[in-house]
Image (cartoon, rainbow, N blue to C red; front, top):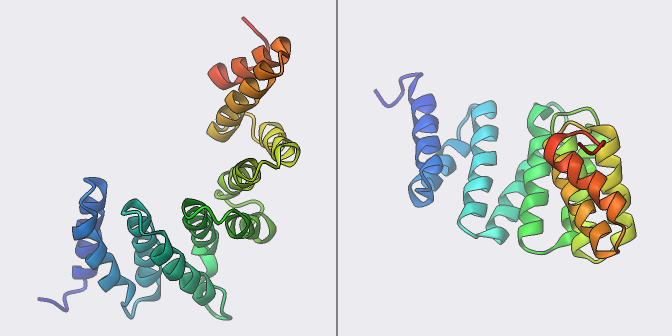
Amino acid sequence: YPRHPLVPDALLARAHCFYNTKRYDEALPLYQRLAASDNPQLATSAGLWEGNCLLAQGKGPAAVDGLSKLVERLGQPGADSSLLPEAYLRLGDAHAAAESYPEARTAYQAVLDGFPNSKQAPEARYGVGFTLYQEKKLPEAMKVFEEIVRLAPESDYARRVSAELGARAFQQEQYGEALQHYQRALTGETSPE
C-alpha cells in the first residue's frame, strides 16, 4: 500500500487541503516529505508548496533557504526548468516578506529576464515595482507601474497599479489624472463614465 503509485498524489492533495484550510502545521510535513521524493516533478511541486507554506507561517528565512535551493536545483543542466519562473517568483515573495527588497527584486527580475513571456511575468513585474516602491525609489517604481498598465491593461496587476497611481496623483492634486487611474482600476477602461 505505501508504494502504490497513487499515494504521492493523494499525499499532495491532502497537503493542499490542509494548506487551503490554513492548517499549515499539518501541510508542511507532507510537503517536506514529498519534496524529498525521487520523482523530480513531484519534488519540485512540493518544494514550491513547502515555500508557500513556510511563508504563510511567517517563516521567511526558512522559505528563502528552501526556495533558493530549489532555484539552484532547477537551474542545473538537464533539470526540468518549467517551474523555474514560479520558483523565482516565490523566492522574490520570501525575500519581500523578510523586507530584503534588493534580493526580492533580483529574483523577480530573473523571471523577467529569463522568462519574459511566462504567465509569471506580470506578477514579477509588479514585484519589481513593489520593491522599488518599498525602498522609496518612487520615480523608478512609477515607471514600472506604468509599464504594467501599458503591457497588460486588462490584468489584475494593472488594476491594482492603477489604484496606486490614482492615489499618488490625488495626493499631488492631479485630479484629472487620478480620475483616469481610478477609472481604470474600477473598470479596466480609461475614459470616465
